[in-house]
Image (cartoon, rainbow, N blue to C red; front, side, top):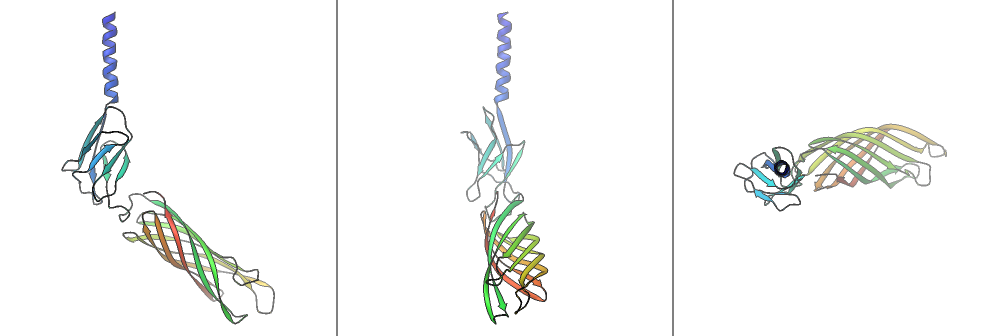
Length: 244
């Protein structure tokens, strides 16, 4: 009987030992899918590591199960990635490279509108505020709003525009966005009446986003056209990209 228990114990130890042994294999490549030899691959939270071979492949054994590997190479961005069978890890130069996945972004803009006030025979500068959000990889989309809470001083007036459009990555961190949509303006009906009139029209957006890491500096123009009149507001803002 003791011999039977001893054999069973040995079998259980062998099974547990084999189960605990973690083997991670994969390949490290650059942004053009060329293999990277000499990259350092380490198990996250562990001391085990290895260097990739001439063909970019690696193999690491660990006595315990692990979830992620950390891969680094001089001059390239370090990447931490979840372990998958025969995984491929792509290293790039960082924020200059095109992202591997679609990324959400959101931002806020401020603009200045020059309004020709024919009632008082002068020009006024009014500030407008906007929001923008979207999703992009090399090509994507966005939605935006732009609002001027007071078109004419001391009157019940305002303007609003909403646009939807596309975002296109030109090269490196530079993007261009262009869109169109709806605009609304509430302003005095005429010089003598205290009444206000509501106007509906079109809205157009055009601008650039210069991205550095997860932050982009945005510059563009928002134009509204209604009742034979067009107002163009230069915009300046900041957007934040979520993820890597």
